[in-house]
Image: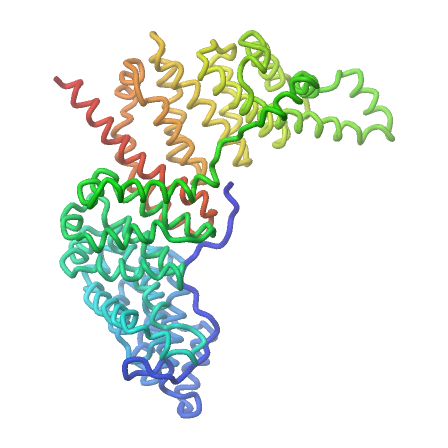
Length: 568
């Protein structure tokens, strides 16, 4: 979870001009051999990266397509530095770059779209709104229509000698730009509806068999523009829905295919139900998603033979014994003997692996196989002692991750069987506070899950408002402040569990102003996913985050209903 990569924005490959036609124009008109000396100097100047915003924008008017392309590439790189963006905005960069979207040179079109995409992705809401004010949507829609025409006439065959497909690559940059604008500006969304851009998005979506990147971008854009947009949904006809269904049922085992299915499945269940042509199509869409994502998230299970072997050989008891750290006497002996000192690290490793095994056993064995309710309560006390005993081992991330995983699995099992817990909420809060301070993402995730389980149990008991408030405030703080989207998503999920039901939870949510906090955080969360998730997180994590975003919308609607009832 949380493997970090460079954030995906527009990045131009090394410049390589070509001269094959596209709609009467060529990607690289202005052959290098025919550049005058001044134009060569301009290109070299740009390549050195020493020009100001004004000079770069001025180069967009150069008669050389190569110089214009270099200018667009330079701008696309510079605007990734947020402190640079105001200088471009003040100099009307959007009005200068907008016409480049329809430049006679295809490479300039693509790089101009990439520069505007980066500007919209790295800028704030106000930047996107300002781009719409400066009429970027007019050339953008025109560009998308030209790309659509190129896709319709299957331009791949006429570009066989090109090292890249300019039509699809330019469409991908344009759709990402459109996605950014529609997510941040209601005016952009209104223009999207008015110009019928959804047909172009659907056309790009169906390229999943030949260009998965373009299809994923189209799926993201479609999900964004359909959210809270009833005007658009009423324009979708049966062929449009069939197109979406065909994308959801596309064959392929790569994670990108699963991501497309997850994005399309999240296109607001209630709205799609009204538009769907039949119950059968709903079932097909649901089954398609389950077949893809279900392969990743299938629950652990044991065969009868393995279960019998575990019980006959007393494996749970043996693993339980290994979770106990060796006695202080044994550790002291190892410390005093230089030859034996490395054994301390090995014993720590054995304990951590035993705790990991314990977590797995708790996830797959029933209560009776684990020794019954009394054995689970004894195990809870044992784990509590391990956590709060002051040993060197307890300060290690590996140990904290392993023991918190075991505690989470144990609490989940006890909660599902309504077995009273031995750890107090205060003890668990101490563990979770340590978890959030850690740099270990898995430990953080376990910490918020533990509080979510504890809070959901307390919500069903009387006189627990104060404790639920404490848990709710903690989870809200994590959700709104943690730097990892994985942790933020888990914290939101935990909040949904804690405040899903119960009078105590209802009162606590009202006192901590949960609804207002989440409504304020919702657009921030959406933007964080949009700007930070792609390229930084795996497709599996993107699917989970997308599901959290959808659940947040539903949870806010539920909380609004709860608050309305309080007023009557």
